[in-house]
Image (cartoon, rainbow, N blue to C red):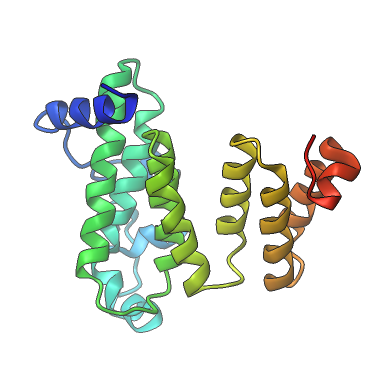
Length: 206
């Protein structure tokens, strides 16, 4: 049995004991993006005075379900502190379910947070050792928002991890061109080129 299948089976085995990590404290809230404070359930912790209708007007109807995405991020955060690796994997596996809930219930193909959600799903899939499932979500983020730097950055990392620096350089250059010269991508490209020297610049890796 390969590692990917084993992780999935372990996640399913522990699924009945690991629940969604609803945000229950200010300390958990502070580890989440600022926009989470106005979502359903979480606003009870944050005390956000802005009516949720204002956020829906700003971001779209998908904001109604965004608390599930914030729960997913909370699960991912909490998994870091778990000593039992199997339970930690199960927790981040459950985070995928919360992300999928948002995606299933969102009917706006241009929902403001979709690119970020796609990249987060990819990040969690990478943690579950499912890179082949992760990369398409990064590509979906780029297709929806061609200037979204985090997606280019993670795809380039993926190719570096595979030992394909030429493709990583190519992705970074595409991202720099589309993102109005993102400082983050430029920094990554310079680091990669300095490691690979002329070979990286020419796309030829020894």
